[in-house]
Image 1 (tube, chains in turn cyan, blue):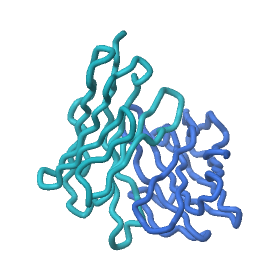
Image 2 (cartoon, one colour):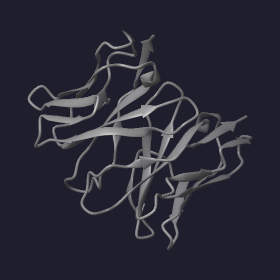
Image 3 (cartoon, helix red, strand yellow):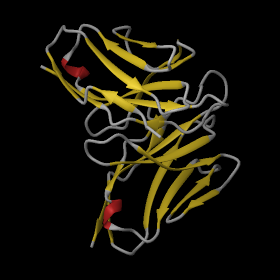
Length: 115
Length: 114
């Protein structure tokens, strides 16, 4: 049972344009969402997060949007740069019960930004 | 400020052997979680250690065990290795002031089982 899904395995974008990466979840107990970027041979690097009490969080070129009713979140990168080319993972956690912040990840989306 | 460190970076073992992976958390963090990432997949939660106790476990067999030391560093042990245990093993640390907080990952240990 895949509780977090990234349905686009890959995305190709021109430098300077917007990149939009999408993520869907099924577990309504999730209340904290994160995006990580991963380069080959490195561990995931934290990018940005959002709590379920918000619908938008912005940090520089990165903005995450959360639509709780649709159980959907997206990451917008504007403007995209060639250095943004990496695998992007969406992750979710729940603060309730005995979850202790365990992260559940999507399968990842490979972003390629062309010069 | 040192981030999360892991050792070794790469490891080759044969089926049936045992392996120990090590992790030092980010300075100031007290919680360590371990994840397994198979090729082409997202990381899968193995277990989490806090106050030297395993307090949550994912869907992994008992062959996977761990330990947390008083300085918050942690070890992941895998016994009776199978070919399917070949993966990238990631350690993540966080601060347990409330749940659902950001976890920071180390570079991982690439394990190959032959």
